[in-house]
Length: 455
Image (cartoon, rainbow, N blue to C red; front, side):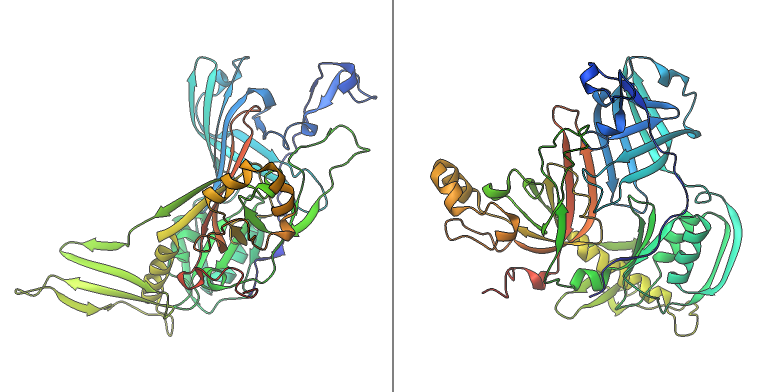
């Protein structure tokens, strides 16, 4: 069960945001610079740190913020109050108007900060309220050119592109066996990766790729990660009540514990507490072309994909035949069948997902990773709240102790281990704070198997 590991780090350097602003009192200021405080000591942890061109958006002006990783590239949108009117100088969206973003972990010894670069794609100004949408931007990603890669695998292709763009590269693979001729004609790396990843892998190696929040190109064998069951998952957490960040004598200390997210009362003051829960059910997928239709299915019990062509060529009735392909195949590599298998498998993953939300960005839970969910019935939670004396005696106060409780009803249909297939970081202003949403999915054969080793 290979986890996604870093092959090499990004070498492209993104400009650091170090912008001081005047403090409200001298007590809040550093001794060497009276009247000033580094904004990175306040924002980035409690609020996102955003810089548009050369202007830093003050932390109390941001009213809405969303950073998502659900597609190939990270997507950013935010709204703020522009008292100074500097956004009127944004003549038009494009590469000349950049957005720098930082989100900092509350501790330095576990996770890297999020440090991303975007270019503005849309600006909406209504009085002093400005809404901006931005697209991930690293040089060389969008440069149209002609380039031939020869006969190459998907793994080697993404490795090459990551090196050319000075991005990092991470994968749960050491290589792939899908060698074919790849040629880029008047296109860019973003389009090339998305086109080639669709016909990569094989029936037992379903590949997906994305650029994560830390500037790594990820190549993931989704088949392996989705079906894997990890017996132990650890994560570093911090207190949800952040102490004085200007006090270097009292640094925030990280705590390593089991990655078990729960709505249990005992963890409601930790980063592991689930504030929202939502179920998404999507129907199956079919592809139509003219009067023909292809129905794609994935059989979890057999771990195999199937595609059926409903061909409207028979006068009396439709003819049901297996997938037929009369195109060119490069040696042993059949990219048509691989694309069908991949589409069917990913459709299965996305057909039944859940979304859980946390109070703060837990940067150790990333797309492609695994996490455990322990969900208690609402009536059980209510009964515990009614009796305050039971909270300390019957509810675990530490995530490492969450192994079920006789006084509460554990929903074993929902509880269990999931794969993270998407993440969304939201911020709703300083008063309402953060919301970190994880989009989760798991195999049907792992439902109702939570804590199976303990039962």
